Image 1 (cartoon, rainbow over the protein chains, first blue to last red):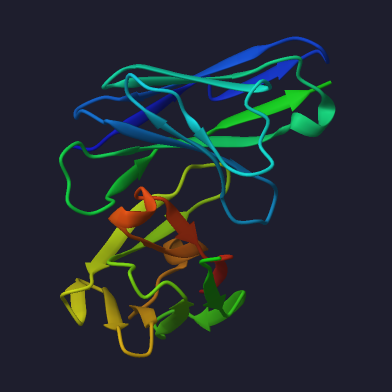
Image 2 (spheres, chains in turn green, red; image 1 turned 90 degrees about the horizontal axis):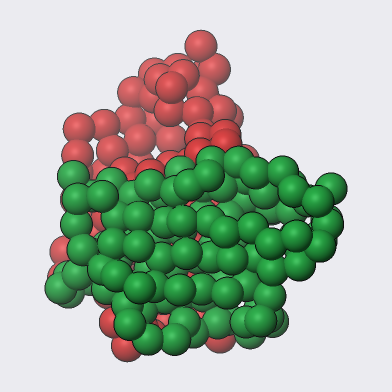
Length: 117
Length: 113
């Protein structure tokens, strides 16, 4: 149980294009999903918290117009990187928090490696 | 702001030896402390967690201890195996912070056969 999937697992795109990454909780409902980015040999940096049916909460320094998040259902959140540039190249990871849990038990997806040429 | 410090950044042990990774947290309201293992090119995998009402938890070769007074928690891996080689992250969170999780910087564990 507690499986989170991400799609795609990797993507290469040209500078200026937009890329959508999907995060799904496969066997549980998740009212809250989190989006992280991770640079090589670094820790996870929280970008935003996504709550089902409401607007995402972005961390300081993260541009909400550049990283569009939609959490339309209890099992799906999407992150769209708009007008991507080479500096957006990174490993993007989502996690999902178990609905109704008293503690912040999160389960992570396998990550999406984005390369912007 | 809240932070989690993790030590050491790199740890090399011989197969069969024990490995210990230590973390400290700053937010005294933190009540949930997970540990994640991340292999190269993959997402973090929850390996064990501990809640603030417990001082110790064990799962086969892995154990975690929590000292709330000192705001320390540690991961202990016994009888290490080469497949334990990975990056380990500690983390702390609480509901008052919107369940936001603060991660340590990570420990790169090498287990030499």
